[in-house]
Every structure is written in structure tokens, then in C-alpha cells.
Length: 257
Ligand code: APR
Image (cartoon, rainbow, N blue to C red; front, side):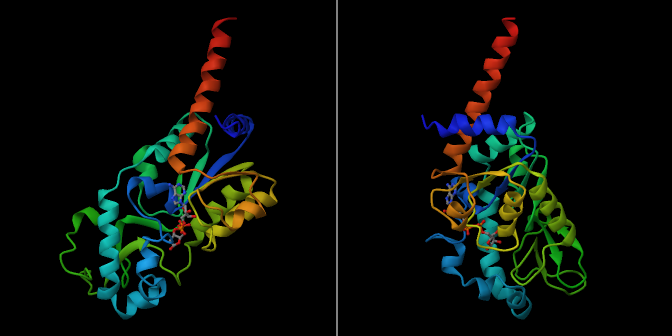
């Protein structure tokens, strides 16, 4: 057993405010490839041509070809052990909240309650013209782009490149990053701003930072205290087991008094 797991569990248990920052890597074990790996979306589609709001406005039907592929992946995915481990950490009182860059809703489906969706979500479509929202499940998407009764094109309710993070979401995430004394960074390449600034905010506040990622990132040598070169499922399950072992040890001690 890697001695860093009990060390991390100890640290979580003694911290005041633990948060997680997650990215596409946490959902890879749910069957959703991340963006920048070999089979990722941005390796097959040029992000400027397909992920930028200007491209969407210029040719929504073309961008929807990529969006349909993403929509299909999201519709087939279920939470994995990493999502469940974070949900369990929250319900046991160890984890305050999750800031996720993912739009797949898998944290909520695993039972997490405090989730800041930094880049929005895929549950809703929104008219790019009048702003009206529609439940994704209520639409068939047989023809693309789907069109609003007002004539505008519908787009997923997530942030495209070239768009601002909604100010209230940005503020909420920054507040969490500034308030935490421990941050678990799971499955993000930390290459997309402003999400990539959040670990720096946490570090300015002297937070202890654990990164879970099979590959090193720009953060690994710059500000990470412990880098676990593991899949999210394996690492978070091991951390949760250590937390639960500690808890059951405590209960036994108490009963024995
Ligand atoms: N467990 C943990 N990490 C993993 C796993 C796994 N099983 N598999 C891959 N990873 C790591 C990769 O090594 C990579 O560093 O997850 C990271 C995913 O990085 P990206 O594909 O860049 O995804 P992300 O950081 O979430 O991207 C940020 O970019 O295109 C935008 O809006 C999109 O929210 C996304 C943002």
C-alpha cells in the first residue's frame, strides 16, 4: 500500500475546508474520453473551428455535428467509483464542495450536492438568441441545429471558447478556492483559464494540494504537494477507504471506553 494514501486521509481529516477541482479525466472511466488525449474530442475536432462561440454563430449546423457526438457520449455515461468516492466524502463531512469543469452531471448523479459547474452543463439547451432554456431530455435533436420558437439556434448550456464564465459562478469558485485549506485536483490538464487559476488561488492561501492524474501537468512541479500518478477511480477509492478505516477505528475506540 502506498503510504501516501493514509497520509492524505489524515490530512483531509485534519483540514478545515477541503474542496475538489475536477476535469474530464475523472469521467474517462465512465467512458467519456477527455479532450486532449489521443482519442479526445480536441484531437479530432479543431477546438477553434468547433468549440468557439464565433464558429457556432457562423455555422451552428457544423458545430452541432460535434455536439451530437458529445451528447451521445454523455447520454450513455454513468458515474464511476471516483464520482462515488467524492460524493461519499461530502456526505461524511470531509469534502465541502466540488468545482467541476465537466458538463456531464456525473457528480450530481453520484450523489454530490455542492457542485459548482464552472463550464455549465449539458442538461439544458439554451437559445443563443432570446436565452430561453429547454430541458435536453425534452428534445429529440433529429434535425440540427435545433431551433427555438423565436427562430434562434439552440446551444448547450455550457461555455464555449470565447465566452465568459458567468460572473456569479466565477465568484463562487474563486471564493471556494480562496477559502480552502486543502484542494484535491482530479483529472484536469489545467490548461484552460480561468479554471487553471483556481489552484494558484488556493496555494496563495497555503492550501495543501493533492493532484490525481496519471500524467504530470503544469501544476505538478509548480504547486502540488502530492502527485498521485494514478487513475481517479483507483486513487479516490483508496483515499476513501483510508478515511473509512480511520472512522471505524475511532468508533471501536469509543465503544471500548
Ligand atoms: N484519472 C485521472 N486523470 C485522468 C484519467 C483518469 N482515469 N485519464 C486521463 N486523465 C487526465 C489526463 O492525463 C489529462 O491531464 O485528465 C486530464 C484531462 O485533461 P483535458 O482533456 O485537458 O480536460 P480538462 O482539463 O477537463 O479540460 C478543461 O477544456 O475544452 C475545454 O471546456 C473543456 O472543461 C474542458 C476544459
